[in-house]
Length: 48
Image (cartoon, rainbow, N blue to C red; front, top):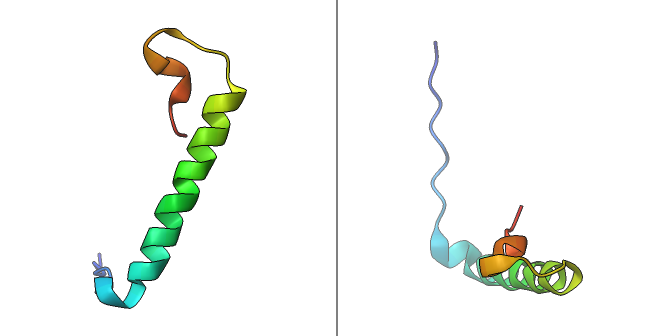
């Protein structure tokens, strides 16, 4: 069985993409939070 290693990912090279992805993830979470009925202890706010 041949094992392959993940390629090295240089953070400075994709820092802007990482920041953008993080912000879009937060936007999706806020939309889901606003569209879902409230459950005790924010159980309705799980990110899938």
